[in-house]
Length: 154
Image (cartoon, rainbow, N blue to C red):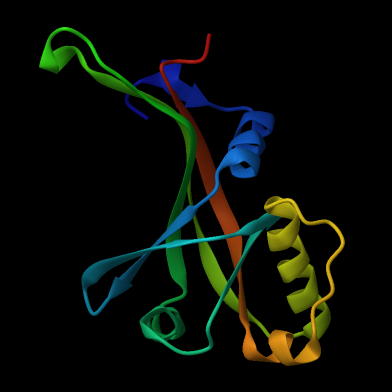
């Protein structure tokens, strides 16, 4: 990172952003072109869970190339100044990379769905078999993550 003072190196800071962020953006490559999708997500130690339909462009791309990059941000605020060039944007973000795994094991699918539901505030969940069977659960095995805070964390 060019501006070291903005780096969030503590895992607690990174985990806090993953906890507070509402949307994850998943970047992929589709036939040599960038492809980005916003998704809901859940987090467990070292992995991120996603859910989606079993068909579509995203699934086709991930079957061809499982490598992804992701971004989550929170605490965003536009700060306006008198001069246009003085405007800035405050945020905290996490950017990382990993490999997507298509979760087939039912117990892990349920764990992934539970992680997603917990993230958005629902602790006691029942997942009907029909809904679980119709849902694709993806797991990102995280290779690396970095956090950034702008303005720099004091």
